[in-house]
Length: 360
Image 1: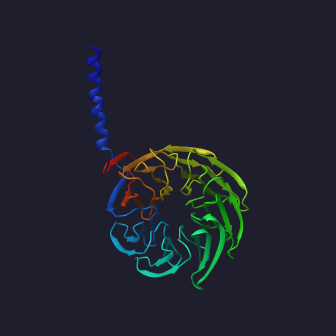
Image 2: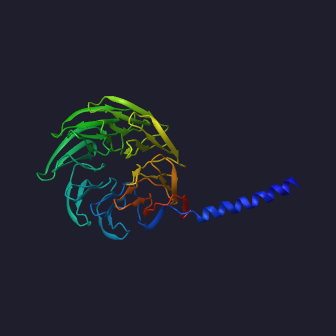
Image 3: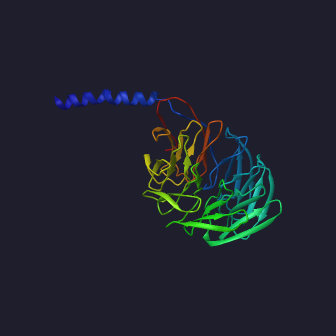
């Protein structure tokens, strides 16, 4: 009798769970789901009018409308591994393994290309209104003046594969595979560097209003240094840090690790919360206008978290995700998997949790 009673009690509980899940309303609403042939390691970027730019190892750069309609594409002679960069004049610059830097307008029309003595590994950033800074080949950081066609080389050790930023004082910082974060002035001179114990690869440093520069390393630490290059604090994880930290509206910092965790820390490096995914996270988080956080993991899921790190929703894509998702100013989220499955996602404001299983 007790066994029969137990079976009877389990039955309505199962029915209730299924009913709740079936009626749950998702925060994720897929607008479009496009398959692009090729491997994707670079992250999408958006133009001023919310067009999406994607670069691929299939040697193409693609331009899409925010509704997922393809506008344009261009084929080069080498892989595009670097993430494109939208410049102040609304042109798009992206480096290629064929040793060229390519320029397009916001609709994907080809404008120009410039050849350099080495593969362009890194994303570019604007040093000023006419000069760009990026990593080229092995052991070179290059500042290129677009107007004057002048190239200045800063010699360093090993590949420079980081994503550069311009600091508020006009200097630039970029990470390299010599385990260093390099400081470069407007004259293309290396002024100083900060040494870690692992590659500073792909991570784009974050400058916060306190003057700290925050970035990740393959030695598993998130570092916070001041502008003189002195360590202020570091936060240890259990995996390499490949992606970039992002600033939340409440002043906290969110970042991800190869240990599969999403971490939220304050500006003193103190842990606020963490969220565990099912595999390593290579990509950077995306922060939405409403402070929600979008995470793409190697477990194939795109996660939506609250500003405090609470799971709100997720979508299973069926593929590993290397590229970082982006959030457009119209609320659309764009994410591409390693094999080119590209999602255009709208986020609704429902407080209920739902889950999609796609191509599982």
